[in-house]
Image 1 (cartoon, rainbow, N blue to C red):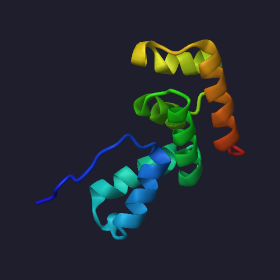
Image 2 (image 1 turned 120 degrees about the vertical axis):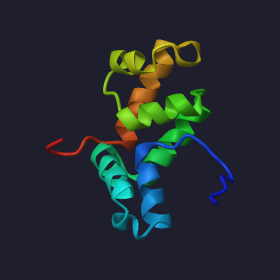
Image 3 (image 1 turned 30 degrees about the horizontal axis):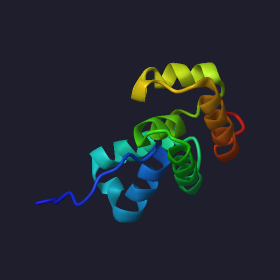
Length: 114
């Protein structure tokens, strides 16, 4: 039986790194292989950068859920970020969202050809 000892919101790149680290034979399981394929396809930055961005976003007042969503989707404009966040946590002010977009641009650079 599996025991859950903790839980937290993590962005996609961190989930991918956790799968690689803790389940080295994940490709032998077709479900885990599909999960890994998804995580690989939708990782927008490296796991270290994602963790740093999460920490800074939470430190700036975003909930861990909102921070994870922003790191997962890496919006490139304030309007896009506000549309993604909707009314989570009662909504966020434009200046706070603008700072988040700038932070994401710093940590999660768009890859060439993406």
